[in-house]
Length: 110
Image (cartoon, rainbow, N blue to C red; front, side):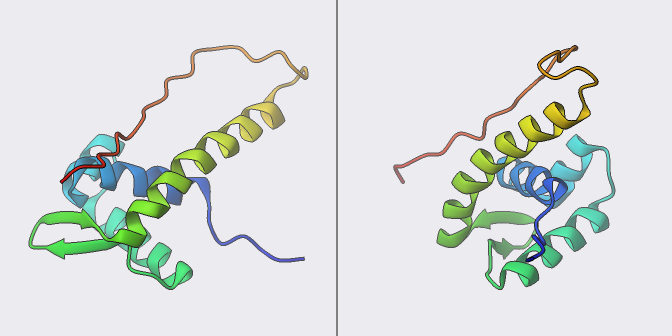
């Protein structure tokens, strides 16, 4: 059996950084420390063996691989969230509460 090194927190953090364009702003939005999110993104890049970000001072841009990963991360985040909600429900099909989702817009023009 293969172990999936990608956890839902990696997807959440990645999408927050991609949207914010900054580790600091993403950390503020997520309520965690900037060093923690930076380390998680370094771990993600190392685990995937790709560069997802171009670091330009405090500004973060997605690499071309990062843009592709962003599309897949968004879809995978929703699938994983749905599975987590389904598994946590005491009664199958009986979810309760509010679900707030954010979508990262993708621009196709430069």
